[in-house]
Length: 290
Length: 257
Image (tube, rainbow over all chains, first blue to last red; front, side, top):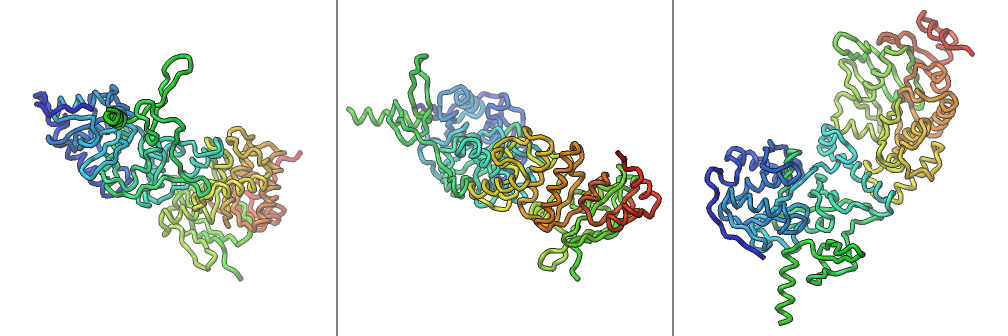
């Protein structure tokens, strides 16, 4: 676990990189998104000093909601120490001078690429998702004009066509990530490419969840305590992934595991994808042993 | 006497200076198959699309009678209500199967789409219904998980029919359903359509330039030219004893083998 205290930002940058007008515009989109849970609000996405697909949507949302007192945590596939997470944390240290941490509990804003931390979130936290393709219906309906109407008229039969196709080709619902959800019984939403393992965590979550898609110029949100139901069939109910192994580092049997190839002779191990959760458990185990 | 299922009154559709349909009126009675024939560019397809709500007419009315005796005017219907009607009460068979099918999902999913849109949520039931409909259109049910792109043209057209009829519509619009198919496949498809129409008591509006198709399927015929109705009457009457000069020309232009 590493925490860096707040510092002085680089001169020449406005607080958190974006200018105030842009942040205002994004905040207006955010407010609308929160008012209509699951609805995709268009916004004037800006060029950011990073390529599309690296989290430009999430970064813009984070930049708009940060205050000087915030403590930022950034995770990439659950890990605090991968390139994307490290760079975004550094970016905000440099442009906003805010404190950063890898500790889920002390963070006030968590920007994530494709995972929700294993530790339960609280009302004082905001989770910001980086979203590549916000439209859950895009797989079967390429026309934006048509998908907008489908959302407006609650015309969601097509979403089940995708799940039907999964079962008919694989014998079970093989969608493991970006698993579509229904928000408060109204909008169908793509929970970004988070594994479906995390879908139940979105339901009735205490924290505010914000989704930013930079290239597609869309923002959507889940206010705290929102009902989020994963779509399924009566005879093929929604299920999350299960593993027969435990984490080889901390022994957890209830977290999302990554399979790591260790050599070219078939050696492999399973480890928690949430590095903060895993290292905390390892410390706990050491202390218990001593 | 019962009311007509569909009443079209004085329907006009213009594209800029071109008038595609001008002042078209006709009634469709329950269980009737109405053929619309005419040369290409005569406005048949535009008329069909306006009546089916796929295009909006500039003038005139299209009224549809529901089972409960209510008469609804198409132009006053909200878009979601119209879309609901298009996927439950009505069906539209396109000339090209790829316009009416989803080519990137299996045949079963194609047939199941209307069911799922109408709140079917049980995979097993959707699948058995899809198998039933594949058999009804003479496609081997072992092909249920194959993509439509692996089907022949005739099979694709039959799949499109199954996909549309699965919601048990009352009114079916067909736009040249046999166009682009070879003669033997055409004959088989026409036979199938005729049987399905009888079996389910469908009312059909079928647009075709092929008088043989019209003769085989329809009980009443409308002959169109330049966006206007030239002649209408019972199919046999129109084809055996055409009154207008244009209908005579059309009938005499059928190729004789």
